[in-house]
Amino acid sequence: MGRRKRAGRGTLFVLAMLFASSAALRMGAGVGTALASGPETDANSGEVAPLNCPEPPIALAEALRKRAEQVTTQEAALADRMAALALAENAIETRVAEMAAVEAKLSATLSLADGAAEDDLARLTAVYEAMKPKDASALFETMAPEFAAGFMGRMRPDSAAAVMTGLSSKAAYGISVLLAGRNALVPKE
Image (cartoon, rainbow, N blue to C red; front, side):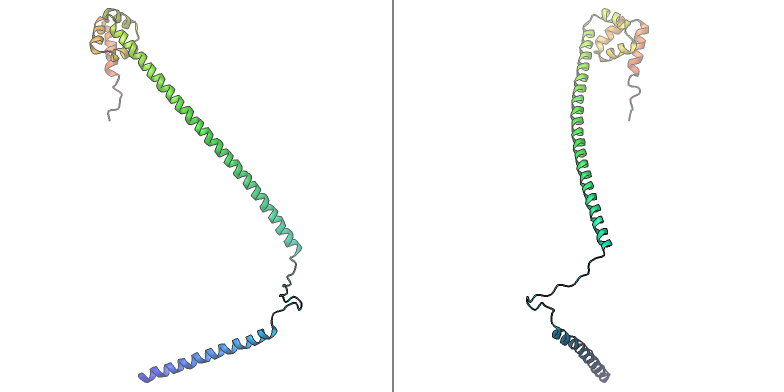
């Protein structure tokens, strides 16, 4: 078994040497020719002569020129479109900012109006509470029941009771029904 390993190594060594010598011969043959020919140079200047490239076909050159013009035109159109989009975007941002300012102003106005309306209702409720119950009852008798119920709900209980005692039973019942049912439709959950 030991002999067989040695025989395999010797064969591999011989094959490796054959490959190496073959490669050296092939490389050596081309090197000599390359060194002998040398670079092509102009005798006076010592520079390498330029390669002689053939002129491209006229149709190909014309097609490339037209394509370059198309690309230039498309780039200009794209630049114009981008400028228009930027201008439109600025206009939209300005418009959105203006609308936000108007919305804030409108919200403040509505808040002020709501506050003023609430103040007016509170003041009128205080007037009705300060009136003599007999006079307030006569006034509430002429009001629509929905309107009267709104004020009765805002009044202090003792003032509302004094006014209700002076109302006719039909008017007092209508106002009582409206007061009892005004929160019936409010969701419970």
